[in-house]
Length: 299
Length: 322
Image (cartoon, chains in turn green, brown):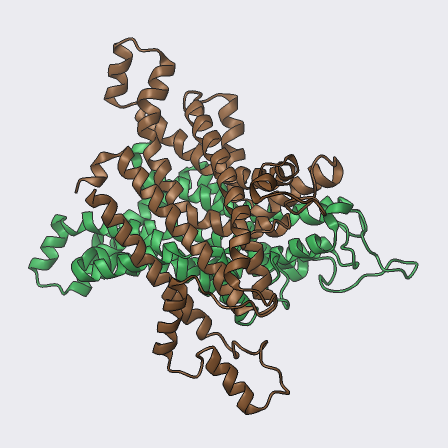
């Protein structure tokens, strides 16, 4: 977006997106959300520099003993696990997995939901009926059990979680976008485009789609949190990717290693708080965006 | 009446679709579904016999027909590991899951709706500044993590509640009802139900609050004020009743997540319900049991959705007359 004014003249939708972005920056909650995303991204990029130990390595104390269940301190910022692994370094390493899962799932959910919503809303009739029945079915499948069966029977792989999230979470996005498309379809500029002989695809993607992009971003941002929560839950019940350190893996590790009965708060509190921070960022952004999209709530 | 029939037909359609997806999901899984059943020492002829016994030697569409027919009769096959009919296993776990879910939901929605309505009248106070972020945080937290904290606090540190299971070891009861209404069961239920309720209350609370805030500016509320009705009566009888509709919608949309979320809560508290059964079955590659547990969870979900639809039609008559 090098020349905003020119884009604005060219497309009404782009200007709406731009003004939405500007009013989001004026909302303190949305700024807080963006700050959390920025922190997560930086943590993931500089994970190797930020961590103090190898997160998978068994560490030893000066006297040669395994540094198991160490309390937080100078040597181990958040203490160690029962097998002598550094919790702080695991927490940092987990941010990579969270970012990866969150962003890919959010993009897939937003893309599928937007496409389905656009097609169903614009073409109506049988296309609409078929896609909305499909949405009903997707919503009737119990979400977490589905993800667990999929990642339990297929290989334990983070991508299976992303696929499952994408397969089941698009309907909410699709429904909202469909409703929005229904109201846009009757607008004068869409009529005008049709009169000039623009094809359906051109009207849909050039004239209608830009106007629903804020909604796409809104649902995408909420999906980031959902995907991270789902990955954590799947890891927690034991079907996570064993080759990756994630916050869900840390919680499962703590749970099965009796960290609870030992009262090792330093082990299972931080990963949960990290997850909350990222999920809340999605909520805050959605809240900010809601006020931009539905100004009625602003009063 | 036709509204009820329409919703019923729709539910049956969705159930059929889910059952079909379930069939395909389990048939297309990698590996032979009889891998756990077929002994390597069996010769090829024996293996073929077992395959025939399960109908696995036939084309897919015939397998599908057999599967549907068996399902209609409540025949879900034998669990590979338990060597019991799947139906018996899942039906014995169903009450535990239903009780946990409904207790959690009831507490969460009762508290959430009342607290949300109350908060709407407390705009700009300290209570709002504390409760709204707290509700947001519990919604954002992993359910099982809330459970882990409650478990550490109330079971391991304070020792007030048992750390897992649904009944103390060795306890015997005359009937299922005696078991469910025992104090021992209630003590076991407390923490998992509280976990579920804590996780779920955020949505009704926040939604109720924001809808109430909107409605309290509406003309009919001003009218009620002019009529001199008491603020409490206006809040409850006029505003809250109308604000309930979005909450019911959200309730319906969230049911899937709620029932699914049970899986992790049941795992944290070793609660012998459907979710824990499913996790165990998947871990042991017990295909029939996993399929049966998944089927029953879906069935409960679809039935609850139907119930919510019917309640919605009753709450908002505009819905049922189109």
